[in-house]
Length: 171
Image (cartoon, rainbow, N blue to C red; front, side, top):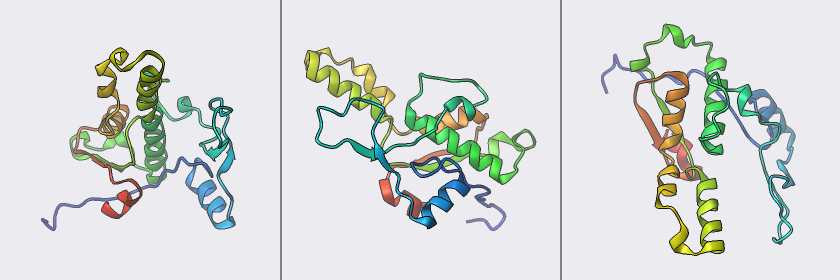
């Protein structure tokens, strides 16, 4: 690597079941607060498990300058929110930054999982032939860093590390 080229991590942003800001997350983490609670996002009565770790008190409009975009998945919404918190934490003014030299690199487990849920629902209710193949183009995890880049007007490299829990180790 050229010694004059640097990659800089300048800020932290967290969206999680135990806090949607780094300080809230850290305080909950060191105090041993659990993120497990009753699932309220959907009816869990058909299932044996009714608890999970869901992000609470999340309103995408609080994190986006472009207004609510319900065409992007929840994974991208969380990623954009965490990126905004990281940018705010860094005190970087993106208006004074070359967008061609500012990129995005994130790690994830999966893409927009709600798309797979929709596919499974359609398959179960109407049969496999009823599934629109176009739905699969909405799933890839590569959409997440692209959506961050679009939100913040960044035109540098956009990278996804889809290695689940190990993604942080690859950074």
